[in-house]
Image (cartoon, rainbow, N blue to C red; front, top):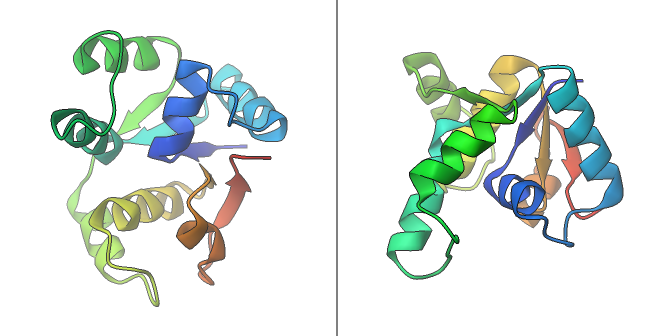
Length: 134
């Protein structure tokens, strides 16, 4: 199964946060082993923004952290024009641009989104999801 890690699931998985549920952890580990784990490039932007605003911190520079995540087998998906257009066209999706881009990336890949974001879990759109808390 191909999995896109939402920003929160990415942090939980690679920082060893106990908030990550065992089912989600197994799904992410399996996707990594199969070369089918992905992260939208916007997640690194979102993390860098939270760090700059003092809402989040890492023990090392985010550029090093990102390199480690990619080295461990997660594939970064760049934002291209098709993803941007698809993000804009998501019906009944809240306005958060990062969430919209992450969902559009997931749909573009035909993947499952690992997230704990209640708004994404509740969205009625055609998105396969794993609750990262479970």
